[in-house]
Image 1 (spheres, chains in turn red, yellow):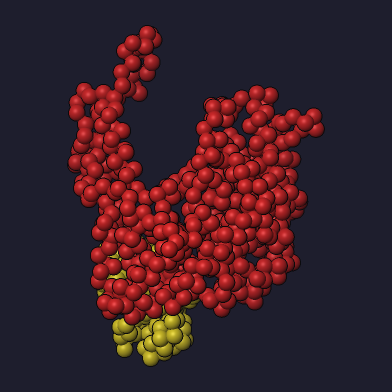
Image 2: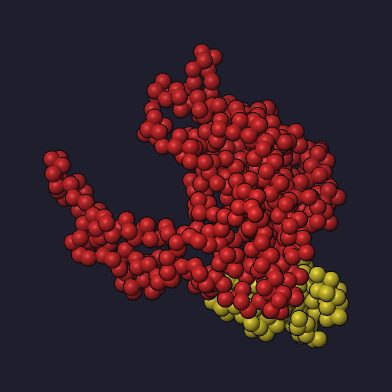
Length: 507
Length: 127
């Protein structure tokens, strides 16, 4: 008998009682820490802040002891699901396990305690890491140079679009449209709008790839470029990518590679060889920073030779003397970050690349793709594959048939899966697949864990088919600290602030 | 799936209710069911000129944001202001209180090109 796969159902999640807020726990006069023996001189607020800037009433802040504060946040963390707790197959998000050694590197005082304004002579080690990271990212993507400044993927997209504009402006051209496929991540159209371009959507063919004929129809002299992931958002490799790139290039546009799905192709194929001109990478995702919940991330953008002069600056560079310094490209689009990017996230990526080496990176992608394909085949006949062909690092299944048969929707599958000890997959994305379940097991999950995940997904479908209804799953989740939330009501009546005057009920 | 006999339809799942002066427009039962719980509706501006097939309004559900296309060209003469505070009307009463706007159609030929209930049923059966 093989080892049991890791399910988080055994996690010591606490009961269903709501955790009180810090305001509820507050007692007037209670302190967390006192520095009364510090010996430092004391200043009166009146000497430091002019009267017109001083509050007339004290701000109502919670007053709790350190012991209660730590217990509060620890109780909250025990109610969370995380990559450190179990499988997190949230498609498109690459929620892989992150090696602790990469975190350890980022905790070293020589890296962590350095001020970003330090002169280059004092931070040669840091600059060497950043330059080596840039070189490694260029080797992985087949590009000539990269900026490490963008704060994450969406910032990388904006950077890429600004580079496109700078490139065309420099050539005296005014181009106004960006083409994106109808399967794209929502950030793509948002970035296009933010950059001031118009969006043209191109359709998907029956094999789940860009519809080349439609693309040729919508191309024109006003097209600045096309944004694409490969593998695409359906988890499928764009087989006609060379033709797609050639069509865009023939129209004078540039090809932008959204690195969201880079985890599938490390050491296998390079975006540069597919015909892409600009590439962003979510290094927090593909490499080694725990992510989700708002960051920080890092979204380096690499470009081919002819675009290097437009990159943001100043850039860490290797000087002729062998030491390291900063340089701003001739026609730089300027800064994308107040300093040099989210440096500790970049450091984790560097550590991850050193830890794996070229052969290790290749096996990261090989195993990610193997796990996704195994899962897709294992669930054949349980859920329907949106497009039945070999997938890359994730597979998009559909619960549409089950929904018609039993009423079980993708959302119910996701909620019931929580009870069985797994994080939910992404649901209802990409938008062109009805009742979509987008599952990305990642390479860090063992065959036993991927098998246990498949078994849980099969169990959910079987329960509904046996009962002829989805009543049971619709009550899920019943074992988590928070049960089924009313997502529609939460969105219709959003309360994003805590109002003490009304005891938090309104905001 | 409810497809009322007295209405006209588009293959993008909008419905049109013709009357003397203007047509009333909304999304179909099939559309609201596919979208799921609708949480926000961006209404067109009264007085705005719209073109058949162009963007008319945007509907956001817990699953996605979708555009509603103008089924006919013309001028927007009224909007269902109730949807601003009660977007759920699109789910509960898509052909009634969940109407989106009325358009003064500029080209009667476009009305004739809309789908009848039978044709629209064939569209949704194919999806």
